[in-house]
Image 1 (cartoon, rainbow, N blue to C red):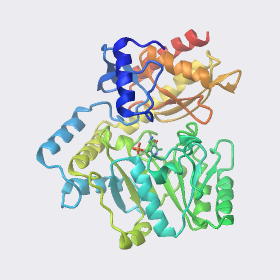
Image 2: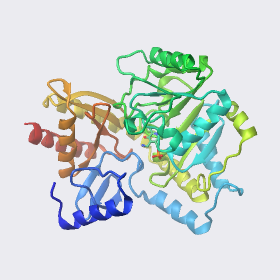
Image 3: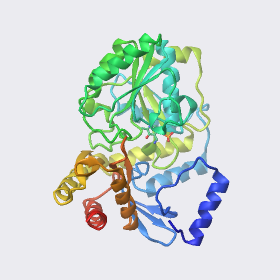
Image 4: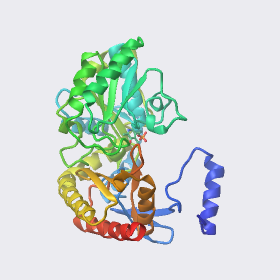
Length: 415
Ligand code: PMP
């Protein structure tokens, strides 16, 4: 793709300065300048409807969250080794959204760190080391976590203590996890954890709420723990309370969270059952320079205020239902739209040709929507699932804009 000279210059500077491991979205990359609510604006002032970024879950640059961040930064910004009310209030408020079995809240800056910490704690608690994940899972970037993030691809090898199980689509997930447990044991590895998204995201947006419970029973029977990765579904996206695991009827041993927790500020964390950290707490100590700092805590509290004050969970349920109904209606006119899996404002739309997964077509749709001012992405093991995760402030009008533009793009590229 031929880029205009100013864009080509930015791409060249980016490659020179950031090196070869970074990847850009889109054949014609976006140069974003500013965001407001559900909209992003590029260098030419063109507006894009953001239906992808699940970090800015309360809307881009929410004024109350920005004000809380700036106000606290002007007063005091330091770590968790001094007494400070903000981080305690945030911990207490988050714990109040979780089942009573979960009693502590620890803070990190990223979801990767939260999962990394969870694994260290699980090793201490169980004496085991074996980790079970779904075959296209993504849990983060640290050396330990990359070893159990198969979606990073064959260039990032899985650890010898890691077993993958097929994504739970039309399969007995409990039986698959049991087989992985048996295989770990056969290799002399004691199972430590099953870690899973509560809506399986990079596995293709799988929302079935019946799959996790039997697998959690199996891992516990083997002496291991269950970590719910709520980095994507958490903080109300599904329109059922704050957390995805509730739909599965399980109480995790640990819950990792991040992305929407700071609405753009790096804030993440790990909630856990007290008994799980008893051993780790006695033998190790935990300190994270930036995790839970006073500014992060102010941001986290403001995010909770906005979710509650603006009724965002109810909005996710209501607008999500409208969105799904609109996509099903479009599917009756466009054969490219296959199965839809949706819960609240977390939607996965299969793109097919004659019923078969078609990643190339999904890519053309993603790029076509970008030209028409709508941002989404594609995911899943076959790359053919449109991943749709707008801010929870998305309205019925925003949904109508999305559907109208998708209709147009489908007519243009597949008609
Ligand atoms: N878990 C899941 C399910 C994620 O989607 C991500 C980020 N894409 C992470 C963990 C890691 O979070 P972070 O990028 O904040 O380290």
